[in-house]
Length: 255
Image (tube, rainbow, N blue to C red; front, side, top):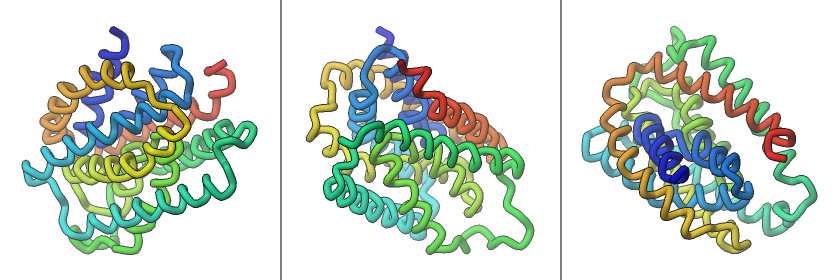
């Protein structure tokens, strides 16, 4: 039963902001007693199903920000391909304490990004490009830098990509959520096989969480239209700080 409630909470966040699996579902599954690898692998499988649904609904409602958003997707594909090459060539997932150091590094990066986001409030600085003039290179780099993190931890398409897009684009909350959902799906589909290969996917767990996630996702998509950009930025900042400390304190929290 707890798995269903975890899915419901994650679905609302995914639909409304593009974040949810890495920030809510994965850690709660770990706290519920599932191994981190199983929680991450199952989370990526859920992303492959849920985020494409969210992306399609957002697109149908006219939330897609335009052609430049595809630069983010291109960066994501490139990031996953680099991750696949790196993990297979160096057998990263089998190195001692690899997960611990990865989580610590991600935690430090999220903490810095979240602090900057909270200070700025998500407002674009004077002199930045106007809406529609976003830098294609910056969007490509955003996708390229976030994809490896999501591929290895299931965290990224909302909690990491969201703050980056808030600070570099003029997209509103539904547009940010639309891009976050599609990006999360692209990366999840490509990287889930990494965890399938090592047996870190629990089909019964997947089904239980999905039952709660689907109605939450639909509610979240509708909710996103009523969230102001500044509150979205603050929410992501606070959520990012919590996520950072969860990752940095993981050796003690997950014993």
